[in-house]
Length: 196
Image 1 (tube, one colour):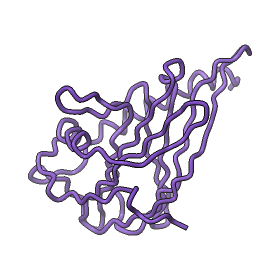
Image 2 (image 1 turned 60 degrees about the horizontal axis):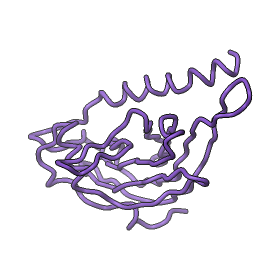
Image 3 (image 1 turned 180 degrees about the vertical axis):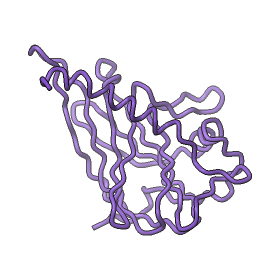
């Protein structure tokens, strides 16, 4: 496949994949997130900001490792929004609701890319990797809110950790039908130990 065609089709394939993942609703029981036996649910907001001329081309990936496997959560700033209640602005990014086997995990890094306009006959993508190195545990039946991972793309991409519980719980309610959040434990990555 010619490089130009591959470059043009990559964002389309990503959007199709993300759309399929977004349509899967997490398991609920009586309005609560309810993981299957032996599993837990990790919730993390993967958000970003970028200059207007590249914003629509930004793709983000959060990489986790644990229980002998790797897991990746995706966000595309052109199509993903975390909804906020009332007059509070929505956030660009995706609230990841990850159903995982119980165990110990490492949030290893965030990677991503954006389209760089160039004078050549095709546009090139700029790629980046930002280390995260935060560990967390997920017990069987647990639902854990890990807060927010925010990626800022300016002259040099960087990330910061935080949390926005009202926004994220509202998005869970609107998008996933969660009406009872009392079983969600709040353990943001910002307060978790750095991993090895």
